[in-house]
Length: 244
Image 1 (cartoon, rainbow, N blue to C red):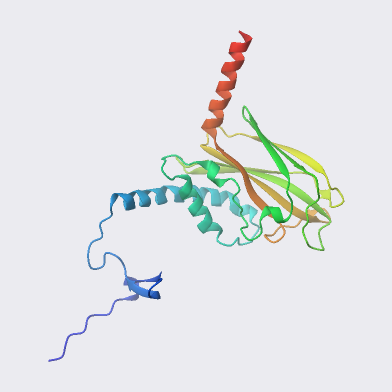
Image 2: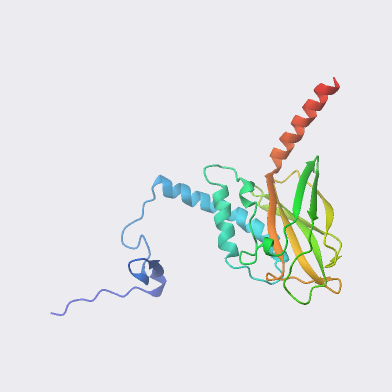
């Protein structure tokens, strides 16, 4: 009597995985033979992932128009990891985790220039001041100038909405070694948190030249907007006591 063969799994029922022991191989999805039960830690991890994905999607939506058809390596996985880390152990996202995030991981901002910046929040105005003591080193033949830019992104995960605003300095010839620019932005007080990115582009014949290999794109500041409101309130109270 011939032994009955087990029916082969359909491709839809298999997934490809990698392991240190067996390398890349296919196996049945978890829960195919026995029902999978999640412990509390796994349930919490799944919940954190679901929440953080919403933030990452909103931030990505605002950043995409400024990538200029470039494809930063591992940009999306890095952003997902960062937003998840920003929720670690707290129901509220900690936006300061985004500070120093490089949009172009392989082409960091410091390879071009090392400017200094100062950010001040006064009421509903964010002021970003950028100063530099040397011209950027683009290591390319075509640039004849450079331009700095600041991108402010506002996120409201509760209402699943986002907004952004970008402003640029004037174009400086490469012969200009030292300089500064000051850019003002309205603080959208009805959003949950704000993220500020510093941008640097080379220019050719007074036109910005964009691209990962020639541009800098880094997060330089981030904060919950309600935190800024509390700090402003404290300052007002001190002022009232002094005047009294």
